[in-house]
Amino acid sequence: MAARTRAAVFEAAGRIFVERGWEGTAMRDIARAAGCSVETVYSKVGNKAALLKALLDVAVVGDDAAVSLADRPWFGVDGDRPLDERAAELAALVAAIYRRTAPLRRVLDIAAESNAELRELDAKCRRDERISRTAIVSAFAGRPLTEVEADGIQGVFSNEMYLLLTRRSGWTHEQYQDWAAATVVRLLDLREKRDHHESPHRSGGPG
Image 1 (cartoon, rainbow, N blue to C red):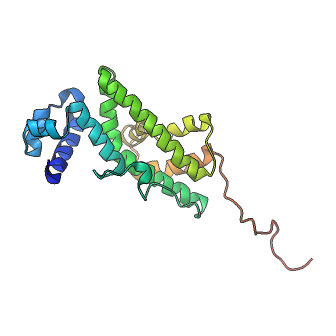
Image 2: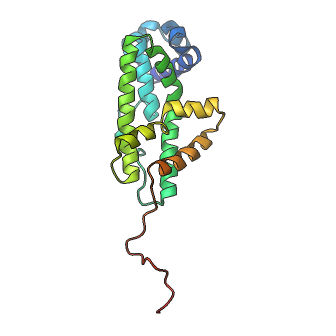
Image 3: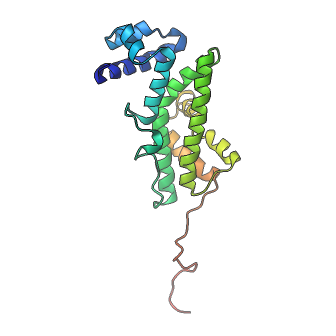
């Protein structure tokens, strides 16, 4: 499949899945919208479940390049910046991912309730999400997370929470970012590190 056709299939499939849900999405409709045959979609991407998985993979990293999330140069936080700036950077990074993935994850969540194949995919996605989320937040915090902290972070950085606040509560994307940045700092009880060369007393001359 040419890159342009593959991109057209992904664009059409992502839109139709979100608009119609798993049950309402037919491969022939995706093929028609992408301007190719159903056989082309099946032979080059796979069945409907494989297509949804491929869409989720692309949504996580933002493109179709064969580079994992952990190996992306932007997947990280500058540890030399002040705490509030690092928290904002972390929240912006994660929120950008959820803006792409949350609608598709909602499709998968609903479909997984009645589809064994998708139930396995959903479970794998959740495991992978926890691993990547814990890794980047641990790096941000400068220490490993406890299991309780990792569970709590899931309530802040998750597709479900992103959708709840931006769709159900009417928050903007930026409001979610600001809330997540402040909440993760409080949840992990983080404090700005003092420069180890800095005197604990103000400099005011001898005396």
